[in-house]
Length: 384
Image (cartoon, rainbow, N blue to C red; front, side, top):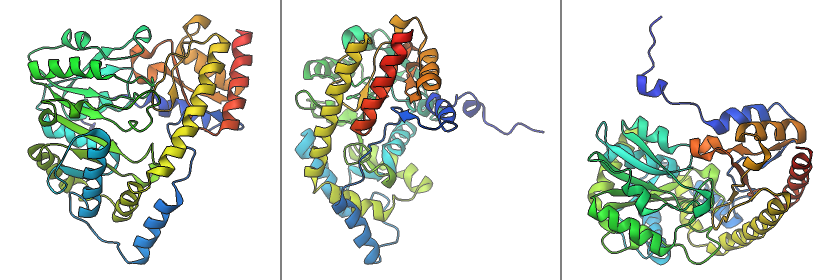
């Protein structure tokens, strides 16, 4: 029988997270630190907005770009929080989650063989998304001793004449690392010097615990060479609504919209109504952030007490402790922890080869479950 699968699709590996959690699905009484999904239910006023939109019969298509109401709300929110001004009607595109926004941005700008630089460890979809857009993925290792911050010098060392795009995700999944203004200024200077486009995934920006989040899009000369990607899943606990957005100069927005209109048409109108309400109800988001901060502090202290260095997670809701001192690989540690103590955490290698020796532990899990998890992990480490 003919093999119909395209070569570039066949070459993409399955997600390491999904493979691991297929094992989890076969077990009972597992405490999961593995999923990057808030345990909070979407705040009521946001759900209520979705319900009311259905009651009013708003069940049809919207503009490909999204409803004017939501795009205006997004433009206002981005100006308030990121200090970057976008035209709501021509420079904001509403997408089906930030994942679709990343895919659109890559497909809109890459020609076959163009190189995309990104930091590693990183979110599992970056390298596959680049490959699906016929680009060449160029990972840049970040290190625990640097707090997993990306340095301009490390980017410069990877540049070639085919380098076109730099992808950023700070606060970072899986390390919890953030970038300070000086880091961003050095990276921005390099991007301008070498004419790079920046795709900045700021899905965790609201979950910055030390200082104020800074966006590279707000730096002088960067707005015109940046696509700002964001969504509602994490900070607003709206994963199931699948709603995100991209903000970019008009020509880039138009290019992304063309792909979006032929592939998706538009995001769900119900989700767009809910998202517009979310941007008017930041108080609920701030309450959830404070709970994440308490959980983070508890996890950092607990892992340090076990002798598993937890690093300095200044953002997102992940701990990325080193397990190298146990003598086990990341995969061995995670599998044995699951089988012997029924705690699920993700091997660091799921986020790229440079994640070896680390474990991703999500603290977007209820506090009582975190307490059980750390007791079990401590017992496991004590036996090693």
